[in-house]
Length: 246
Ligand SMILES: *[C@@H]1O[C@H](CO)[C@@H](O)[C@H](O)[C@H]1NC(C)=O
Ligand SMILES: *[C@@H]1O[C@H](CO)[C@@H](O)[C@H](O)[C@H]1NC(C)=O
Ligand SMILES: *[C@@H]1O[C@H](CO)[C@@H](O)[C@H](O)[C@H]1NC(C)=O
Ligand SMILES: [Ca+2]
Ligand SMILES: [Ca+2]
Image (cartoon, rainbow, N blue to C red):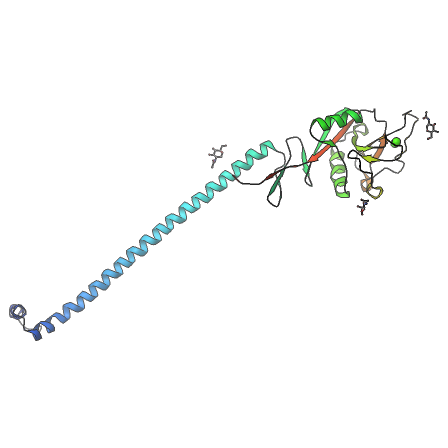
């Protein structure tokens, strides 16, 4: 068949008797199938290429979005931490924060006032700031305060008033919220409270804390004349807001 001259063969095809047509079209049919397959393959390749390209694009824009999100989050926390000290404490989905100048600890904010005044005036300064003199509820809180006070004290005259007084009834120590002092959670120095009246003729009805250089086993409370001018510690609950990263 291949050896035949071309022209006669074409002539036969045009004349088209069934047998000749089917025989001669067999080869081109295989070619067509091959062509179609190649075409399909090419199409598939193009589709795959396009898909992977768009996936790459999607991935890229996802990555960009993630980076932008991260940058925004950092910007937001920078803004927030310029408003509030020492960043955040998270409790579940609640954001606890303290105003500038206040120190967060255990869900509360503490203000260590270095200006000196009587116990009553110190307490008024705290209430003016929406707080009260500190009430110590745990050994852990005493530890936090003792370490801070130790750092802030350069001499023994720089002790701090706390929210403890027995001015209503001598020897009956109450916190500013009216609750009685728990004896197993008290940190009186060994000779305190002595209500001494040698230097303080009226006795000593107000509680304070602080020992320069640090206290042994957290023991650093004293009672003193309420009119003495001392530094003071205010305490209030941390601001609580539902945390939403904008
Ligand atoms: C973050 O803040 C800086 C300057 O404060 C600004 O240049 C930058 O565009 C901000 N980033 C975003 C993602 O807003
Ligand atoms: C007093 O404090 C101790 C030690 O933290 C505690 O076990 C006890 O329950 C407290 N007592 C009262 C009446 O709160
Ligand atoms: C000082 O305290 C002592 C003993 O507690 C007492 O006997 C005395 O009356 C007090 N003096 C004054 C001036 O209150
Ligand atoms: Ca007293
Ligand atoms: Ca005393």
